[in-house]
Length: 97
Length: 479
Image 1 (cartoon, each protein chain N blue to C red):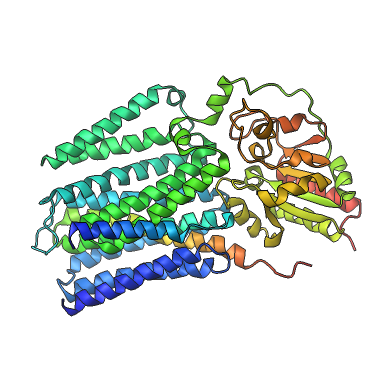
Image 2: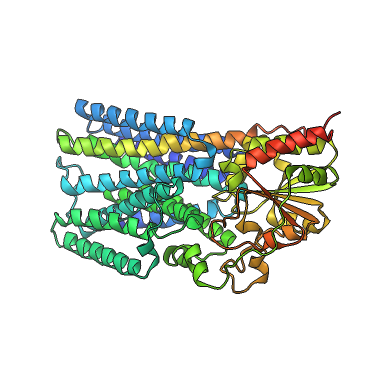
């Protein structure tokens, strides 16, 4: 892809992000932050690319692997912890009395 | 276009769509949990898409598989364990830690590509041939490093492992940070000129810049910083997307970057701080000691748990103002028992939630939900503020700055203008607190001096436990 079209992707992605979370109740800010944070671990794809492209370059394989580890720590931990938070909202009993 | 390319294109498109729907769904209580899982599914899908693409084109060597598996297992395992074990009260520092690691990942990718320009004649992989690649590598390293060290410092400060060093409150810190920033710029231009070794300079100075910028920030402002760093990690991911030429990374990174910015803005508004003053103003307490706002308490009334119980028994309407101190004492469950007793006696109980109660917007809602407090009893500040004059008793539990009337009355106060809960309008206010220490802002709370305010000194959990006992003795909540 050309650089210009990647810039377009960046621009539209940013606008999408602004639009998507424009209106969120304060209750959900912490889970949202944590969930969005998990998504930022998408760099795991870059790490994977690096490992695949590294061929037999061992230092690069190691860098890629460490990078993948960090990214997955972010992704897996982030989604789990968000789920834990949200689980608390959903199990509230509706019958108040 | 051959088949693997088309498949990857379709999967990527689907993943972006699902991620967008996930973020959207996270903004509604009902759909939030499913949305989170949807986003997680989209992320897994994107991995499948990428791997199948390489399997269909260049193939994946066996040593690549080995390193992929090692990295994945270790990272996922630690992430899952931490996510399961960490107490809900430590959520801000946990998010900071995860976030920092995301930044580290982007940094490492860019660093790897910079040190070892990948051979193999792949179509998009002639790095360092164009300016654009060098710029995206630099940005990825710069933002990634700041995200990493900044998040780690933020986590350490929230955990209490790091305090705010004195020199960081003086003007010296601006000078130091400017030196780091200029040095990063020099390293950046050196890199573009083809001097690959200056990449290390860039790594070092941008890491130092992350530390230098975060270290002076006081505990009260830390959530804003974490949110901002969350936004940075998105930007770092987008930059890494430019480095490896992946639209998916750019879209997802940009979405997170934008989301983090919005959230940061919301938090600043709730705390009546501008982003500029958070980042460059130093900690709030340092400002307040310089101003005339601080002073001695002159009219403190303290009372026993028994008196508090008697007043509560006679009340018709009670509002609870929970703060971070409640969470620290792990007293939200005990509080729930107290309020259950009151409700059984026909007393109306409502929880007033300040936008930044706890340590992050929405943090207190999570903590109270953990203790099974019905969602309908949680009232936001604007909804509950008109109710205070008609309220008999307000219980302030571990909250401080958010109930300080100075924010309304004293234009010289650093808190002036911050939206607060008007608890002093109620007939009686009980403040349950360990001592007379100031809140996060380090500012004296005028509420404590008011005639209708009584202090109940003690650890929140212990006081609430005693309160349950006293209420039992009074026969409250027994059928």
